[in-house]
Image 1 (cartoon, rainbow, N blue to C red):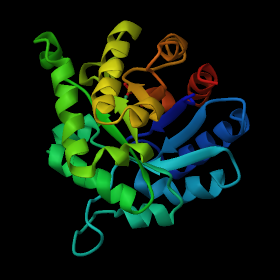
Image 2 (cartoon, protein in one colour; image 1 turned 180 degrees about the vertical axis):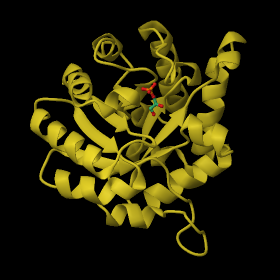
Image 3 (cartoon, protein in one colour; image 1 turned 90 degrees about the horizontal axis):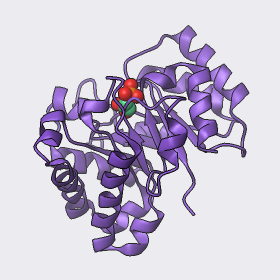
Length: 250
Ligand code: 13P
């Protein structure tokens, strides 16, 4: 039985005071065992503060990206080992904003996925089509390409310690959520692609949906067979909204 996982991706938002207040509210509202598994992914500079505040809570933390190199002359970058050192459990890789704004291609995403695992982090691998690709009927093919690029490099076994997030680009930050039927179709396809390589791996993996998830649509999305949680952007910055999403998955 897969547990529901709700992850907040704070993107480039917050300040020391805002983050402190948000984490205090979440800690108060989200109890150890009654809800879904919960994690938050702050900007790098706030991870230490979040880690200190959440150390004795049931809420995990992670990062939004990482560099694939172990160490060296990579000015401005952050390695997997550094994130592990801060107690991160998760790291998001291949978010569509990284793919489109920072030109991260499938092979770079796969390298980041492997670097994360080499330091004991759980990568949350994001896949998803843009609006044009959906309108041209290519959604399943695009997602399959993004997924198989990582399977080819990391191997199917690696997916025993990974999470996949389906985030249709047209639903991110737009208020347009995929319908539960649209999301379920892609999630089932993701599980099918993994299953072709290893049925047991496919059965246990958590596949999250992301794209305008909020307190009003979470329950309906989570009711779908292959939707095992959510990767939440905007709504994860509001404690009451995020808590309600976590409760929907509890
Ligand atoms: P929104 O929930 O703001 O649409 O963002 C989704 C997302 O990109 C999470 O990673």
